[in-house]
Amino acid sequence: MRTERGCPIPAITCLPRSSVSVHLQKDVDVLLKELKPCTRHLRTTLGNYTDELRTLERLYYKNANQHRTALFFKRILETRRYGQRLIALNISEHVDCLYASFFGVNQKPFKGTWTHVPTGTSISSVLDRISVACKLLDKVRE
Image (tube, rainbow, N blue to C red):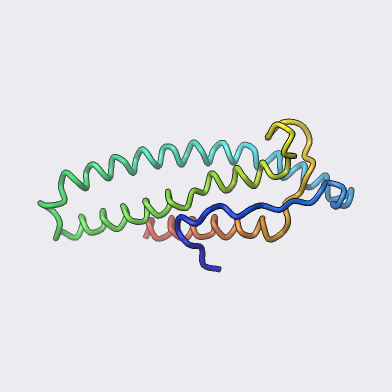
């Protein structure tokens, strides 16, 4: 599935907790417990990445005319483009919306027990977005 850059977060549809069998509810509890620190770490990491990207932007604009034809500068330009695409994917917002979808609209997110479960299509759309981000990061590392 191709994910367009800058496309809005699709509406996450949810089912009530009662639609999940009792023996699977424990698994959801464990997964949500693991997802919470991951979302915090993701927000922190992307914040640091944004700062690094700003530094790269500054270096690019300071040296664009002088080093435009150099091979190392073309690599900087490529890394800059991939970084902008990664930020445009807005991964942390997608993951936060997915995590918040486990909690009711009237309930304060990230507090208490989960009352809803997102549908498989909602989860797969977020996973597709994360997959695209991983591919971009792999290209940057090459």
